[in-house]
Length: 486
Image 1 (tube, rainbow, N blue to C red):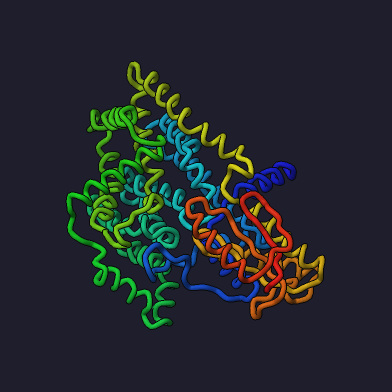
Image 2 (image 1 turned 45 degrees about the vertical axis):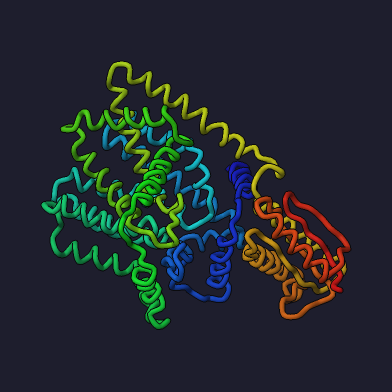
């Protein structure tokens, strides 16, 4: 078991592909553990001045502590939440239809290249794969259960919505109108006032940190939210262009999670799957209404929402990926009960495997030259700087170029590795790294930037006027140089 755990850690360490914004949160967690600074807000959203709640920070903080600051540990945990989501998807598919449906849903989720890569994303949206599956499960239990036996599921559904707002608000914000529509549909099963009050208190508790932060900072969040709604007019009328663009987006999301693109065959399979449900409407009436509420509500919301300069990204809908897979699997599961259905399902999985298994294999077997920059490369570069500086017992400065010119990742990595070295042998100066004054020794570190080589070239030209290169080393797509300041 120890060897297995070590192998898993080693693999993840090479696979943790980093994004600069990830390290902002790691610096915040560093403040929590070492400087005892709790936080009331979490990561920033894609909307100007709007922040998520802090639960994501607190969720991964213990794994940061266990790993002594190593991002691979929270990355492993976040991947495990996706494994849990896949298992829950199997159970939910079995409950809603049959074991074969559960197996189809779990297999698609486990081997979809897009879900596979999302599960390895060290970022706040990742737990939404699990939370969305749980929310859909709770709503299904309410749909099929007897009134007196489902009170707890109402409370759990509201709590899940509140917690989800801490991870990816672009997905979770539409859980609120979705739940309102669902409550109207299931109004005869609404719980007694006591349970409604408990659910409301839980929901407010999930918002409490942001509310407190807002009041402590002169209504900052509230003002930014109002500016988004009124100043930027985030919700506007629908035009033909918007309808066409959103239709392409939603179809791309649906087909992309289950397949890896669009085409006639994909459209045909999706139509066959849906027709198996609509063709047996009395049998699947409750299923279809629940799926309709769960999907149509955000579709309407995203179509009306035109803030953020009209941009809408794939991960905005991460809170609907797993239910989308379940919807398709339900139709495929019903198809297996009919003559010739197994042949169609087998053909689907043959096509699915050809599209997804090759990219997954390439991902897992990628070399340093062919993979994105990983934390392993970054750590080698950072430790080369510290080792080289210690060799000459000298203080130094560092200047970093990271596409798109955001150095947060190395701010954290130098802080983390310097802190570890400082605890072991160095004096309390982060082993020579100085940020408050210009020193004769300057280390420049830069990552390859194929999309914008002109930016990197301009940065290197500027460095020529600052320092002369004395020594250089490369780690994958990262170059480190020791310079003598001019």
